Image (cartoon, rainbow, N blue to C red):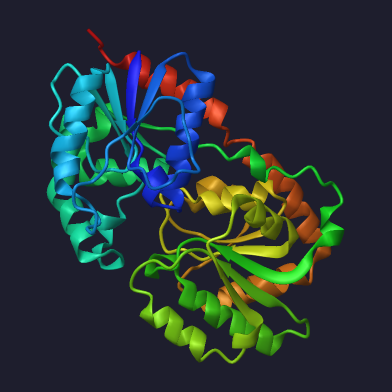
Length: 365
């Protein structure tokens, strides 16, 4: 089967959809026998796949070039004449002949459920085009049962063509250091985009409460690119009484992130909503004890291997932070459980299920 993947997110993003798309492509190329062709945006010369096809934007200074999306990409796909097109970023594919099957990946429904967390244009485009995208898709793939539930609740007609397949974890994050507990350093870690959905103001408040009440000295390290609607976060950060003990590292390489996961005493993920939650899976497999928001898909990812808290309560988060740093046996137990829980997320398993339950179910003429 000849498959085209619209891989723009590999070039223009660094967060979850980028991680998903990049690893999905490599998994399908490594673990299936299909011919995989990637349509690229062209900004990331450091990332290469077999059979890349470059389709450059005409309008270089807009977030989403409509000419490229609705005309240039469909024209390129028609020339390639694939059996199937996979769109891993919600938006499309568009304007294709009926004989070309469409598989669309839905990571979450935050633009529909929580438009206030997104740029106005992005939320508007999703609300306007998503119903049509869902109707035209031959198969829909979601990354968790929580996303499946959200999708079928908002768009019931999708239920008979949607399947939930957990993504995997990049093998780079896997730790084999059996004595790493003794190497833990006194800092809390967050990794992810800086945006309102990630609930970082609660994290700052909880860190302040922890520092005021604890006899132990811990820093807070925040990793991730600046997103949107960040003014309130940076205002709270500027006025934080322990500002000198909070480090913003920005975007870091995968190898540096793995070391941070590996060294932290606790990884904290306070998000209000996640379609999956790659950082939690990455942290567990790197040997980090995790304190995680008990909401949306995150209990699917964390299982019984993490400590949960109410994301609306900074006090509860501070209590979990205090509990964890004062309980070496609990930390060891969580590290062991995290390794076991992370076995549920494998890109080889993903590729096998995607092949047998999605691609081979398409009626290719």
